Length: 264
Image (cartoon, rainbow, N blue to C red; front, top):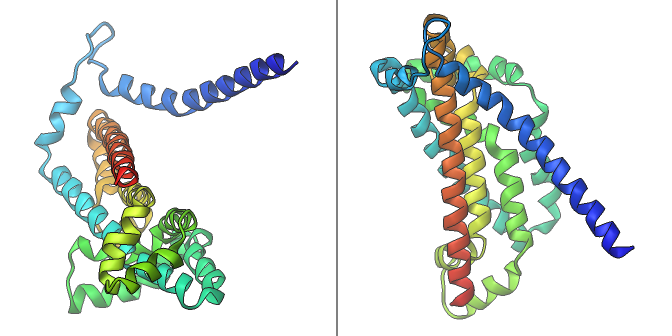
């Protein structure tokens, strides 16, 4: 009976995995088929749409701006959340639930509502500070708070933070040293997951940038789709591939760092 249950469980597991893979991979396969489709009924497959990406200066500028925004947003979210969460767990654990509710609140607020509130602020910023697209990092940090908070919270929950920090403090380490050399190495995987989620959210964001009249990657893809649908789909496929490669690299680096710390 146990062997039969195990076989049924394995069949169920692989069935679910196959359905999930089809759900995610079939749309991507259709995008690749459309982007490589040649002109004419019997035309051979071509990579012209992918090679033509470099011939659009505005598109390349939007890609570079989105990558810069992703890096700034991920770093800003970490600098904002990680010290705050550690301080709350060590000093004022009673407000942890309140901070969690505040960090998860952006999930309940539609992007259009955020834009209505942020439009006057960004109008003032554009006039008095800067009209650079990089100012979107301010609102993007708010957007990624729920995802980064949950990833970091899981990492902190898996370690004895109080014991580690007190031991380091007793040995003469300051709080910056405790953060950089004790806490972060023991939750490296959670930090990488928070960065990855932040990058994925920023690279996929469209509504706020479009309504605030900024041209990021998704806005550029939308505008390009009106002129050349094949190239716009090729850019979308390339961005998905970039996020996937980034996920694999971060997973590899995170696993390698975790094994190194365990050995040490």
